[in-house]
Length: 255
Image (cartoon, rainbow, N blue to C red; front, side, top):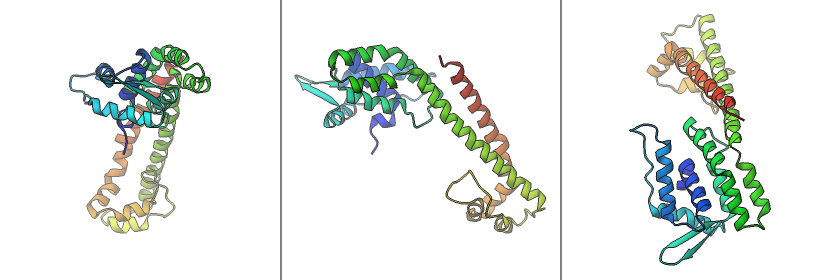
């Protein structure tokens, strides 16, 4: 089961990192205060969804880090925590999410956070753990705001390539339907005639022919008559425009 940190990496990750950097030792409640602060910064409209987090959920994350020797705890009246360099590294790898495309807001926030907290985090770790130089160096390399945008550009390029292939595949099918003068009044017969070697970016486990044959008659008829062409015209092309704008936004803001 995914932890709260994995489900909400931007807000929870930033809150854990900032709490452990600012305070010598921190309480789970300190993390909640940071969550409230950062979630309000990310919430750009009155109807945006707020993250509801309980102290027990934060404590569960911290106990998980302690079990992995990535954090420590001292107990007086209430538990107080400190995250070790290995814990910082673990949280940062989830927080920066290099394997997935972030929303524009999350990417901007992640870069802002790294640019703002880079020196604080590194100084804190050097002061507390002077013998952990190798791990701190790894953390320092991750703490580069430009890398967030650079990585998003790579992921966007992958998405652009995928959509361009989908458009080409759609054009191929539309051309085939016209050239073969296919009778669309018999969609089941049309699906059976589709060449097996037609690639199809809509799904990677089945060929276009296999996918079409499994569709209900009404859905199949809609796909052949207007679904494929409309998806290309009103979805893929608009999505491509949006991705190129997003890519340019990131490119223009890399130092």
